Length: 467
Image: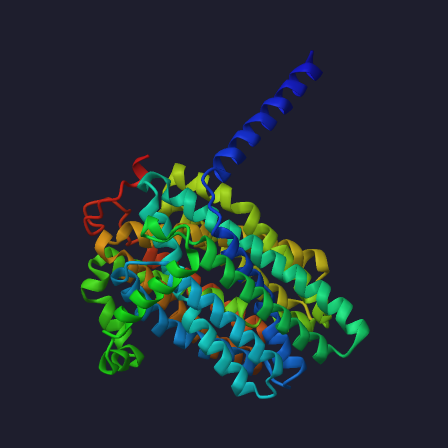
């Protein structure tokens, strides 16, 4: 009798799981494939670039931090520019087309560069165009879906991107493991960047084919649709005068924007402040991590990728759970829980590295990274959803651009600070700084009103906290 009940319970659980999976995958669109391919290329390069700097170009953890900060600096400017254009332009396709095509060009350039500063320049060009996809992909979803399904659809798209990122890390591990047996490590890394260039070119073709046009009459003529949409985008871009671009390049511009109608109320400004602190904290931990594994723990380059595969398995697996939890608890509560988890993980890592002179066992690293991946899904999905719901509809693109710019600004601070702090005071000091910044972000988050409340700027979006 007990066995029958257990079997019935297992079958019921399987049915519920299948139903949940079916609901989660319902409504996915073909153009997600182009995002997956682009994220595959970026996932590989996220770990490959620090390894190239250290093992081929002779750089240290400080140079890795400088490269990350330089790339993030143009990300701030790009987010502000693309956010404004996304609100004004009638089409979304050209943003993705430009982003993916520039990925192909810059990866090809990195494959042949011999200079650290040329690598930084390629990365800056790449990220300037890539940040456009952050706001544009969310706008594509929110414009084509009802508000009640925003979190689920954003979660679906993020999970597809995370799957691409995970595949890219697996590609990097296998390619370097095989390549270093056949040739030198430098040649294997440079050949892998050429593969990433081809992958990005394929993503460009898919975007031109599959990303929907606003004008339904162009649906059967995808390349003509992309060309006309690109013309519309360039027309809007011509309105951004050199004076406007100079103001965007001024680092004093971002605080000013946060106090104007672009971040139109106290709730949005507080949320962006929390975002800055959170991403700075995440950067103080994440930016030095590849070199920590390679240098202090003497882990081969191909195996470094495997540790990040573990992290991204957690990311991919947790997106449906994150969406479900947001539906029950609301974006703000989920954001706070994810930050609290990261606070504990960062503090634990700092204490362990400070107290233990010998490398920890691989299983400890793997479990730590898996927990980081799970918490990232909850943090990232709730953050993008909060930015979308706090914004007025007519300014949603600009607020999403500000969100990405603020995140990039936090990463800039982390890039410079973590690199030099890790070099001068050690990795435990950088991880302790990460924990302190996350703690500050939690304090600021407490003051952010929940979306839909009277203090949240009058957003017309229904509040998940109210069901």
